[in-house]
Length: 439
Image (tube, rainbow, N blue to C red; front, side, top):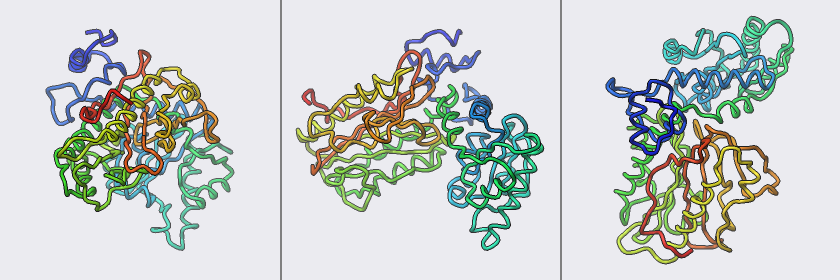
């Protein structure tokens, strides 16, 4: 089968995945939810290919932005660069492992024993070191300055060995003030690694799209569990626990927040789940914000209504306005589209219903939320321009609620940018009973 040929339905895409004589295209990957890896009778995600793609993207950006090497500390960044995982949430606030990656040359990984054991199985890591030095004050205490200077000695040795002698440009990620200053004192130019990571991560491979589809499937399982357990008298946090359960059972990592609200707490938006009891007739609105299998994100928002009874005309109008905004703005997610043109051509809600919009109209997604962020107007003081490229995954946002109103609706879809147009990855249905033809 020619996997580069255009296809028209999900069945054909699934056949392409099963045969898989050649790498999948983005469009083919968009339609496939692969089975979990513990089977040998169906096509799987080519994880080594995915790791190679990500590492090559990083190397390209290191060179493109004029750096000699990068040093990564954040666990998600290390996982993007290598695939290794070790106590991710802990290492987000207590720095432990770190990774040295030159523009050309061996990747060197420092971590505790569990991370070293995991890393030793990965082809993306050339050298594993056990001389880990504490960057966190929790471990270093009053010897923090001493240890960060030793860390700078350690990094300088690697820089001189793999990047050449003399002053080098090094991009560093959250190693801390003392560590970065110690590296500067070694004579190097130290910069923030964020642009390297952002521009590398913005483009996804077909394998990454498959991994994201797995996370979306887990998120949609959580949505179904919440919908099935939505009843008069259930507490918001009790309902939200079903999303957490689906996430952990599905092999995921964490939820970024507790964004579930009901009734009057749906306006204004971004109130987190509480002990409020949900009552019959309430709207229940949530944003899953999930980091799931393979550490890929799902960021999808939906709104339900707690029965029995029928939704009010006002609830239906709110929901339909939000749905219309997502659908119309999704049409703007085209390869080559400038962020400024997207903002200028965005769908405008009826007067009074768009006065407290979601903070952005679109944003990127990969391993959790990421660059870029597209604001509602090019005139916004924080607006920056750019253009969409094939392989980017963009979340299309809407929040509809009057200022001072009793209720509001938040909806959001995940959309893949391809040469042939946008493909919506999030498939969970919208609520027909909350739709109206009149807006």
